[in-house]
Amino acid sequence: MTSASTFDVLSLTDEARNVVLDALAGEQPNDGLALWVEVTGTRGAGYSYDLYFSDVKDAPEGASIGEDGGVAIVIPAASVDRLRGSRLEFAAEGGGGLVLVNPNHPTPTEMNPGVPAEILALGIESALAQMAVRVLDEQVNPSIASHGGRADLVALDEATKVAYIKMSGGCQGCSMSRMTLTQGIETSLREAIPELTEVRDVTDHASGVNPFYADAN
Image: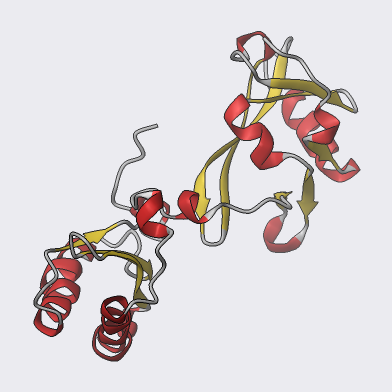
């Protein structure tokens, strides 16, 4: 197990520290408990997180372990670089709660895990990709905007003619999103671009407003 100062990874404001200490005091028994902070994925343009209490001795190999004002902190290895320089604050708005302020942002590959990196790197500037963008903007999005939905092209494989689509708004996490894809988006794209062989949905539906995909973790 690698132990390092957590101050270069995550710090707590006084207000946030007091909230965490109060919560820890309510945990019985609380000997050895630490605040664990993990990056679980992406949400919008940033990361999504999980904060919970668990025993510090259960920290996995490579975790960053430290202390901030009496609060033991564990950050698993995969989250260390993604959280480095972050600050946990307390926001009084909306009833109050902890807010993680992170200067780091997901890479394009992290934002689109269902798209091969080499395909994502090609961009969507080709004539075929721009045609797909126009179909989405002019035909698809106006029709699904009524329930706050939107679909965007994130990549197009010119070799296999596979289009990668990401939904957002009311379509992200909606139980009808699969039907929207097959009977709406895919139909429109294939009619306008017959050479397309497949339209893949790479949306993280589990993080949508009304997620219907169970989180396997």
